[in-house]
Each structure stands twice: as structure tokens, then as C-alpha cells.
Image 1: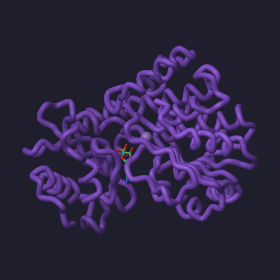
Image 2 (image 1 turned 30 degrees about the vertical axis):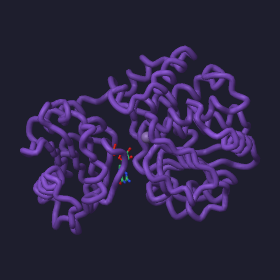
Image 3 (image 1 turned 180 degrees about the vertical axis):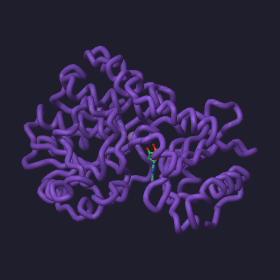
Length: 351
Ligand code: 5GP
Ligand code: MN
């Protein structure tokens, strides 16, 4: 898996071991891969390189990730905007993880773009914005940013193996790889299983990670999941399942950010479903999540209709109201319509 140019690895090593504060940035609505990779890298920089490393996020991560104890490392711009801006402005090294361009960092994007720091990108999405970075590690034939980071860290001259990274680095890396592969259900490469094996051998407690990620939910989440499947899910003749969770539904089940994680995958367990689309109401827009079978490019629909993009089979975007639709009650019909046209090959869609 060590397919990096030696000169890039040496440059990375010298930048990580340099002077001054380091700021790590991840995408909006940070998930397990974003927080896992950022926490692992911040801890590595502190323990192995003696650097003052902090993480900036646009908004808080889901509570299921609290066990990673990321809080002491993170400045959340939705609660501490001044601190987040200062961390970015004072950094001598800026490292963006799990995003292909600054825009994916939401409100932090302008400050990141304006920063005078040396900039590194480590990411596994399509179309990296190479021109905005001094050093880029971008691979798409890999499960996650956590796997890419693991591969990079274990390629550094001073790192012998997974065990020498220490549990505080290994545990978040295993966590992000687990969430981005949906617990080894998708995006699993030979290198992914090698990484898992090496991390297990290094002593990572995978059972504890799974307990935190998948078996520690509140009852409301399971009740909401049942309601989504029994009452909200609609399936088009073309095999597109659509679930629209409006504000009323989110309030009725008291759903916090992150508690709908995984819902979008459920309809794909049906033989007839080829793409699943989940909408969650926010202020003035719906957050749109898309998942598809390998023969369907969900990211094309995300960019054509939902101002978004992402991976071929796991992508996202937004549906604005007013704008794309006049009001939220029209979302279901709009999405069913657009998806049906997309599946029939009537693209590009003019919205
Ligand atoms: P999720 O459905 O979990 O929110 O997002 C799935 C994937 O879609 C993410 O890993 C990310 O790659 C991509 N994604 C989500 N929202 C957006 C968006 O607004 N723009 C782009 N370019 N990608 C997105
Ligand atoms: Mn990721």
C-alpha cells in the first residue's frame, strides 16, 4: 500500500516535525472518518512531533463519537467562532482532512483559503483542489481518510509499525475506517483489511468501538427508524427509495444530529431498490443523503439536482426552499420526479 512518492513522504515528515502551531480542518457535519482522522493526527503531532495541534470544525460531531475524547482538541465554530478563526490565523501548518476543497468546511472556508500557512491535503474524495495546497495526498481507491492517514503515518521514517503509533492514534483510525465502510459493508479494499488486522494486532479494542458506534443509541432513534420505514419511505417504479424527514418528524422523535446516521442505507436491503435518498429538514433547506448500488452514480444526481457531490455510491447535497422548491411539503414529489428522470437516463437535468 505504500504507493507514495518518497519525496512526498519526506516532505510530509519534515512539515509535521516543523515549528509552530498546527491547525487541522475537516468537512461540515463531521462524521467518524473526519473526527477519527483529525483526532488521530492531532494526537500523533502532539505525542510524536511535540507540536501544538488543534482541530477546527464548522459544527459539532455526533455524540456517538464522544468516546474518542475529541473535545479537548476541537474548537467548534458554531460555539467558539473567535477561537476557531484564531486557530486558523495563527497556524504555521494547516492540514485539511476528509474534504476535497475548502468549500466543504462551511463557514470556515474563507479563513482556510486566506491562511498564510503551509497547506496539506489528505483526502479520499474525487476532484481534489490541488492548486490550493502545497502538498496533496489524494487517493480514491481506499476506504477512508483514516486508512490513507494510517498508511501515511506508518510510511514516515520514524514510525516502525501500528503499535508504535500508540492506542490514542490507533483507536480513532480504526473508528473512522469502520464508519466510512459502514462496518466493512462497502469501500473495503485489500489494504483496508490489512490495516484492520495490524490495528487489532496492535491492541485496538474493536468490540469497544462497535459498542460505542452501533449499540449505544437512545430508544427514540430506533422508534424513528421504524416510523421512517413504515410510514415515510416511498419507492418509485425505477427502484428509488425516498424518505423525507421534515421538521415535525425530527422534533417528534427529538432527533439530534447524528441520530439518523445509517437510515439512508436501510432501503438498499430491498432487492428492488437501486438508490436510496434521505432528506432531513434544516433551516431553509433539506440535507440530502444519497446511496446507490455500484451500477448507479448517486454523485451525478447529487451534483445535477442537489448542489452536491461525493463518492459514486455515497454522496450528498442540499435542496433549498424557497429556491429549488417553494416549500418543504413539495420535497417528496420533487425528489421522486428528479430521481425517476435520472434513472431513465434523462440527464443532464435542468433544474
Ligand atoms: P452523508 O450522506 O453521509 O451526509 O454524505 C455522504 C458523502 O457524500 C460524504 O462522505 C461526502 O463525500 C459527500 N457529500 C455530502 N454532502 C456533500 C455536499 O454538499 N457536497 C459534496 N461535494 N459532497 C457531499
Ligand atoms: Mn471519509
